[in-house]
Image (cartoon, rainbow, N blue to C red; front, side):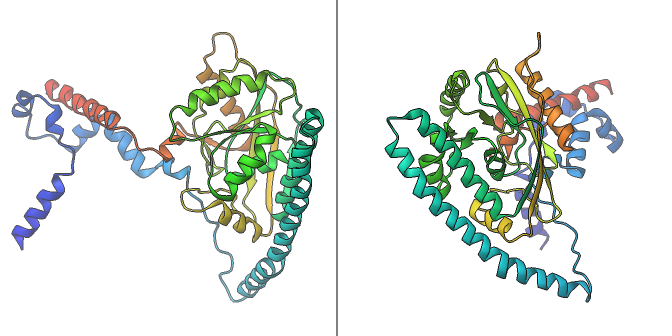
Length: 372
């Protein structure tokens, strides 16, 4: 039994990083034997950082849903909760599906004739397509019984401007699109969402990219610069976080939207979780099921603030500009800032980054041992 435990322990140790590989052999031989825990905590800020990460993992918290406290906990409230389930799933949900289906029928009946028959009249075609896309997004919002309050002046269509917003779900785009036909920068999606992207949303100038394709960055950057110069182009909308965050935090903004040399118009979006949590965890739930969850709730409640346009200040870098705009959005929507790159949600850190961290840790221990 002891031999089995010993062999199992040895196998487990093989997976652990070997700190001695990063230390010179002479320092290992001369190291003191009476090193205490307080010394370890003193010698390395990395240990303190790791301990803090275990206690408060702010990166993971950015992408987790926080379910509300259950309220149907006694014999008086449970029947009311059951009645609410019957109303939401048995009455509201079928009605909302019917509204959505009728909306799609009306939309396609008008969109395809406009798209194909008015090719010789591009100005009229663009104008009608914008109105139809706004109408369809309004139908989507109605299918959730969306209660959206907009603050500030409605965005105008003019060149040399880009709109940026915090990102909680793909419905952010729908909520903003029902007021103004934005041209959005969005990840390519499969299924029916991809069909809508390719056949409908491209008519308003939307630009698609794929995170796994490194060459897409250069192509998207070029299209962004071309789009903001166009006089008749729809306003450009970018979600610089690059991923959906749970509406409690904001992660790092990518700098692409802030180095175009044009006005940056911040938009702050805050959802009220009184009826439903609007956060879409795309790694655990398809967008279809996300919509079903919204359509079986009582309502989707949110506020949208259109903030003052911002410009790059003299001596300010695009990264500093992005952080300043993130400060504005976070303050207005009541969100906490965290220093994480949202793409870490999809990609693991490179081995070089991990080895560099291990080397820094080993060097800090070596310096402490030399002082001993």
